[in-house]
Length: 282
Image (cartoon, rainbow, N blue to C red):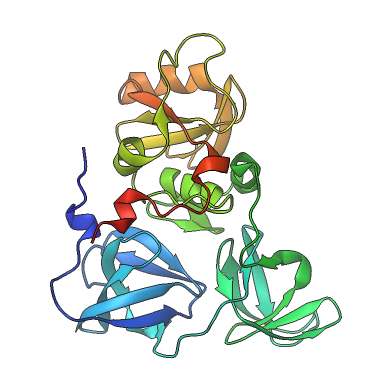
């Protein structure tokens, strides 16, 4: 079981400075090398705290989920913008002008935070990004009641280890994105989500015990139930986000990997807006 001092969540004990992501999605890597393994991604508008720099990379902690890793300095900005809206689609383009025929400037993913500074017709000018169609934006404080409806937007999108953008997600990137749209912040990795998210479901393998929105865990993997029988998950078997009968997934994963370890239920209405204990601990 992870603890609050897990190295994935613990930056160096030194002074830091805040920066903001200006790339559509910037890789947070395990070491300061361009080919190092992806740990997670930080999206446009996220605030990161920089602790040190090496060879064009910064060692950062992501403020949204405390995750620590190395980010290329080229995707960061010292000037911090105050966000007003979030991207509400798995991904969208920001254009050079309020015209769909103008050149796209950047790809923005669901949950990216932008600062709207002007509007023209159906278009909104997002500072340092470009013009985004208003139907792809929601106010920063908007939340939905059904996180599964967000997870379903990613159906068939490619699997990407460490990914949490519209161009590729992993299992916990998918659940993070889905529940954050509902106002509930989850930690980044599956062991953390299993330890800290929601409450355990007793006798979850019993017929009818699971319902829409419940999370089912394996060691190193998680999926979200679409209903009492079907699981939606980003997985390496399909190399995509797929929806399938839970029992089929359980049988296949047991054959190649392991049995599930449990299920948890997050009561969105009561958890929404809370600062989770794992994030509050310094």
